[in-house]
Image (cartoon, rainbow, N blue to C red):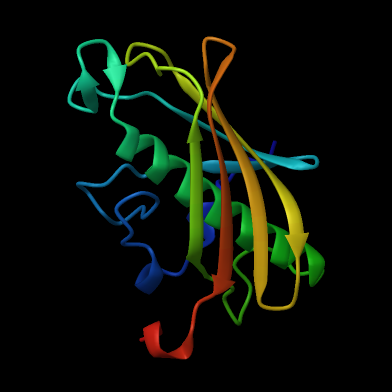
Length: 155
């Protein structure tokens, strides 16, 4: 796996997302790494990420899948353009659609592992499939369509 997370390459002005922004001190600050043909993220839920005693809140699961997939989309696009991550112009994606299937209750005391694979890549959009597991069991799957950030969102 690469030493630097995909999110570490985001320019400062695009690093404030609650899920993946390294500059959001109150956010999740997830870190995704490219590993061969897939991306990997590990996340340890906190006790307050609770739905019911012992189980992770579904909104957190959706956020993790969303932000991991968007990072995966950016890494895939850099790779397709044969560019190093973080080179100019920056490639930053936003979510066009998010679909999550919750397959099993997710224990709050387990480290969560997310794995993302590019399903489809076009010029302005990338579709990523993500699985989320705990203790070796797949608890959720998601499909995220990321699109290049529109001009209207850029500073």
